[in-house]
Image 1: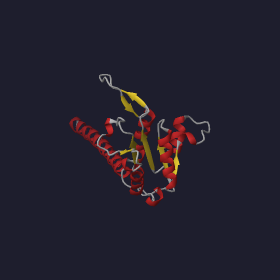
Image 2: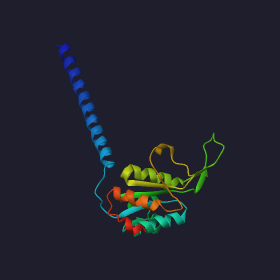
Image 3: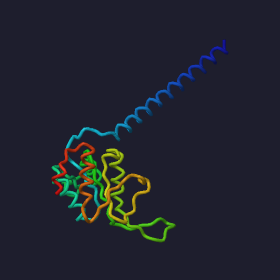
Image 4: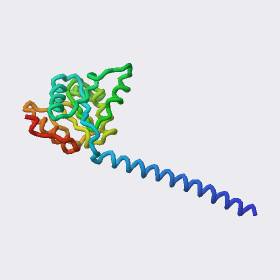
Length: 191
């Protein structure tokens, strides 16, 4: 009799463990589907585009005016009211957008401990916000532009960045990217 009770208990424990594993697999499957969905093209909910920038005012203004010319609304955090919020609260409140444009400009310099040369880098907040929007919107909805010579984040190697050039051909590239993710963009408005 004792032997059958032990088998019954072992079987119950086994079934509980199996149930826990199945539950865990369901959670993984749901998370995987959400990750796949986040990189797919989603319907455009608004015409707002968040502009992540450092200290280069000229480039920030140039991209903001381009976004306006295209009939879209640039969201530049420091231009929005604070309403007694912390910077991260304000950032999260205004980040409900369909797309973000991240400007990697040479505002800082830095190097690894073993390196001898200083590298031109984007500000730390720009790198942080790039990661935030990649996670929130998916890679296809984040357009990163960089100044020549600026260090690109190593975890993002292989992704195509748009180069800010003096001829302003980057404007057409940005418009093409916005059109590709679903914004109604008239390329004639750029000229």
